[in-house]
Image 1 (cartoon, rainbow, N blue to C red):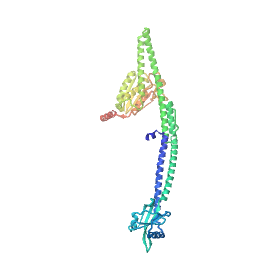
Image 2 (spheres, rainbow, N blue to C red):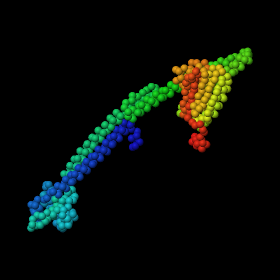
Image 3 (cartoon, rainbow, N blue to C red):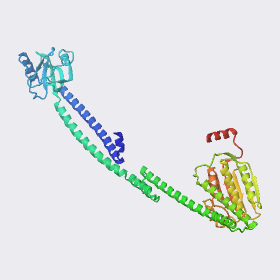
Image 4 (cartoon, rainbow, N blue to C red):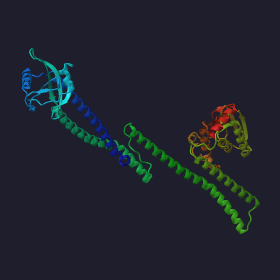
Length: 476
């Protein structure tokens, strides 16, 4: 049954649940109303019995009839109340127009003087239910007191209660049907935004059209869901555009070194095929160019692999490293690439939490840019002080309108397009620094050139060995 319920559509389940809840509420109210009415009617009947006394003349006539023994004949039951006299031995004298009511031990106790009066439930000889009030009544000084039972039939109350039960049942049925219809209407109205969202999701799945947007109305849960869907499709569209742009830019960047490499290899192959050897100098230059193009391709592929990782994923295990040592290693590589340049450095101790290889690569990229854009026999100044690494060159600098784009993937300034590089170096720098919790910026330097500033949180002294051991344990 539960499995069949879950197989129903959502609006049908909502309508069914609404109707069931209303049915339970109406049933509870109807039963409570019926029970309260029944109790009230019984209380009113008991009050009426307590305030009702048999006419003295009728009691005398009944007593006189009992003095002349005759066969007991059933009454007609036409009276408002049934009257009978109860003797101490349990005998009874029934009024002429009354139904005989069975005598109870409580009635006998009143007849024997053990109790003043009693109000109880009883039945007639025919089995009809009655309420009985038995008490001692003073008839006359000569006769003294007699025990008289006055009974009221319950069929009038039962009839009224039955009519009330039928009325409440009819109202409950109408209420349940109305609740089911209202629940279905509410479900359809409330789920209309969900239907629009479902249609939009199915459209996106069918057509891969990420430009679909759902109108947002209000601030309820459905509006939040619609707003989240719009944000998700916008993010997916942006991601797809970036992916397409990355592929296009990568293809463009790969085409140049591949074309140059193919040209050089074709020249070498043609020299071998024709038997005309190239001059030793030209051959050495071609081989050097092939080697440089292969190195450029390898670097570009490495950069693409680095950028293909999610931004939230760290490239390797993070641990406490000495930023000054990594900067010193990067400086040695930079001096090899620019032997004619003067590179000065002042590195004060600073320890950060980062992935060593990625951080070293980022610093190498920053220094390579400084070497690349420095004039011949120029100077590059490197300073590390309290977690701020500053790299200043004395080149032509970067235009102010180009500064917002320097960290974009594959972006290269017009002056740098003739130089080797893929346009991914600074993107990798920004990504690595942000993963380490730092900031990076490029700005024009006073007097010409460019200043690259990298700020990384850390401390001037390494942490205790116990802390380092705990960090390594957490990473494992």
